[in-house]
Amino acid sequence: MRVEQISIFLENKSGRLAKVTEILADAQVNIRALSLADTSDFGVLRLIVDNTEKAKTTLKENGFTVGKTNVVAVEVPDKPGGLHNILILLHNSGVNVEYMYAFVQQSGDNAVMIFRFDNTDEAIKLLEKNGFTIINGSKIYTL
Image (cartoon, rainbow, N blue to C red; front, side, top):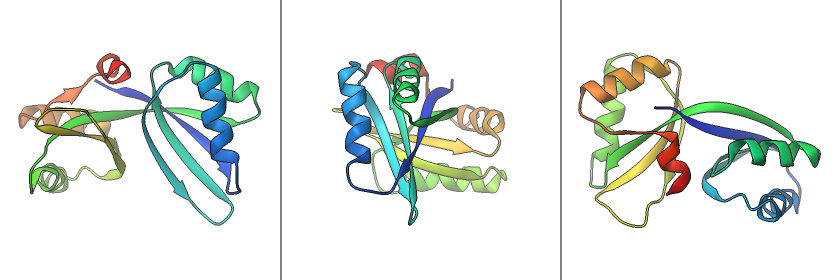
């Protein structure tokens, strides 16, 4: 029920992000979702790709610092309050969202949110118990 995500530490200067996408394109790795957070000197690019190991290896071979973490993909009703209902459920149960970002699908009644929780096992159990759909990695990588 977890999805592998890679994190790349980037200098915050022109062309570094384009270099990452060039390397992945040349390696035939497809980006499924991404998030970019920055500070004044460095940024963290978080990616879900169709081939995590190939992306990680190829980026490392090209001098990038790359880490791998597990995140959770959750279907969120695509209507007002859809995300709020998940967040209030987590809050009321004491589960903290460390970060999240959206995953775009071409069709459907649901959006997909990628979450990083402080207690992943508890979050998954809570969400499933309350009827939310957790999407496994093999499905995300091929969407």
